[in-house]
Length: 176
Image (cartoon, rainbow, N blue to C red):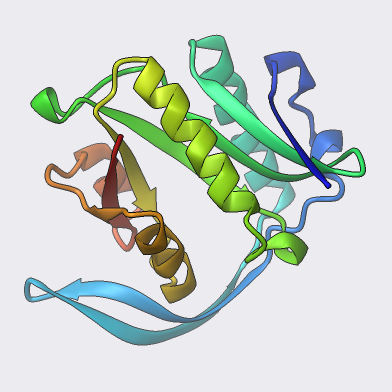
């Protein structure tokens, strides 16, 4: 049984992630070429280093301390998924809030954990004045299928800092 709850900044430590497996084997990615979306072979393994975990923890702590939220999914007391939403609206009349992360441990992917974390994030964003969630999503075809299944579409207005930071990500939105 999975238990979901928000996290406080003081709970965010490297130890919290000891049972979390980020690893994702990617074979195909969605890319925008000449104005069209195409699927391309682009095999690699996505995993986090210790430095990546430290960066993640810093970002998640900043999210919580600035008024955003981090939701977590636990199985038998171990963290198995998390999602974060930033507190600041952007995008003019789009009224976006940024879904800055959504990750599920490898062994639980495809079992609904990500869907619940996404729904919690949507409800929080709606309650904080957003009209849409903004998602700068990994371009792996599995990731894109996940977001499409949740009703996400290409963002009407791209957020340039996300495009600059991750040029291969797909910029998405989800109406609330």
